[in-house]
Every structure is written in C-alpha cells, then in structure tokens.
Length: 307
Image (cartoon, rainbow, N blue to C red; front, side, top):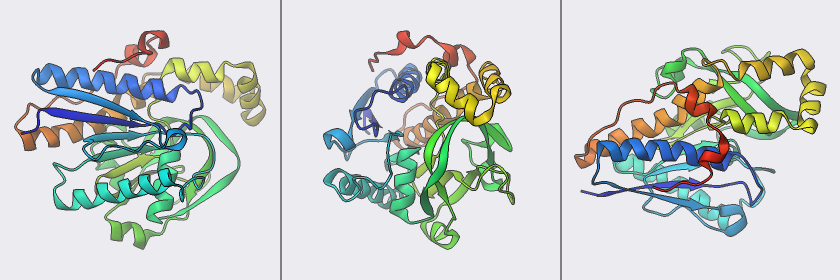
C-alpha cells in the first residue's frame, strides 16, 4: 500500500507572471488539507514543473496532475524536447488507465493544456479565433456531461472565466469515440452555435479530462485582471459598458464563478482521490461544497503553500 500521494502542477505559463498558478496552488492546498485530515498518516507531496521554459516534465509516479493554461499558440514547441515529452506523458496516462484506472495517474488539463491535448489526440481542429475571448461566460453541459460526477452539480450550465485567443472546434466524433472520450460541455447549447462553436470541456480518453475555460479562477485573480484600466477598457470596447458592469457584478453571485471555483476542480480531485484511496485501503473524503469565503479570500494569504 502506498503511503504517499503525489500531486503535480504542470505550469504551462512559459515563465510569464500570472494569477492562475496561485489559484491552482490554493485549490491543491485545500484538497491536501482535507486528505490529511481523513488520513493523518498519508504523506501528500506537491511537484511543480514548468515544461515550456525549463523543460521539466511531470514525474512518472505522479498520481493527480493539474496542467495549466498559458500564453501563445498551442502548436509552439510541440516538436521540441519538452513538447514530445509532454505528449508521451499524455499517452502514458491513457495507457496506464486502460490497464488499472484506480492506480493510474489522472490528468485535468486547462486552456493551453486542453488545446495541446486536442492537437495531440487529433480529436478536433484547434485554430486561432478572430478575436480574443475574455470575461465571464456560460458554458453548457451536454447530456453526457450532466451524468459525469464533476459536472453533475451544475445541471445544464455553469459560469466560467474565459481568456483565450484559440479554440477547439469541429469535433472528429469517430476519433473521440475510438479513444473512449466524450464531449462534456460546449460554448453554446446543444444543437446551436449562437454563442460560439467551441468545445469547452472534454473527456479525451481514459484518465484525461479538461476544460477550455479556467475553473481555477478566484475572485482576487479575476478582479486583478478586470480592474486594470487597460483591461477594463478592452472589455468595455469589446462587449460594451453594460455587459462589463454585469460581469463585475456577477462575480459576487454564489451560483456563478464561486460555484465553479468551489466544485469543479475540487470535485475532480475528490472523485479521483476516492477511487485511488479505495484501491489502497485509505479513507475517502467528502465532496466539496460551495464556499464563497474561499473564492473571495485575499490573494496575499495564499501566495505560499506547504503540504
């Protein structure tokens, strides 16, 4: 029986300063705390790797892996050493899940990493948008997504923070089915494309899921972005002052970004840990609950994490 749970944060930000890394670490800290409370003898270890700027790859013995968004094209570097290594890692996750899913590593990919996975598994077209999409928007779950534990709490839609110049469109359904994957959410309601054509959440293959949007976004991080004068001006120019004002107001609605922050990645971590714990005779942990206090916690209290 293993006595160590290894968490890995794959930082795809290419050395660029960002809020997302802090947000991911906050989520991992809260998760690790709940795991240790239920299993005092279990060691929880965090590894933080940076493939694009440092050439670091996820360790082979990682159990739960969060892979972040980042700037630039999802095609940049894919044939470099780090890109080839990361793609081998993706294949290894799938191969191990086909053999022993309860013991295999599990990956949640976000934005840039989501796009890389779509390119690597060749399940859709990944193209540059005509314009940058950024702000708070709904994402619509598919019938299959609504039956998936991590999306079940959201019913037919959830609210998300978007910031992307690329998107994943034109699904190759036969390819995705052959991999054992499925579409979990879309930019528009099923059968429509009035809000966009993008696939916003996917199960790519056994052990690999992800979202185009940023479920890690917390209130301090979003406010730090939208309240910068240049970003506020860009939002207002793109969407108008009324929509900008509604976006800012909606940040305090507990059924919107706060719910996504509280339940999506924490729910995935919990579900995957409980399967891992059952295989090792450890105690499971309860599902996360909506927590606006955590969503709104000042950023400076979460800049460092010890596990």
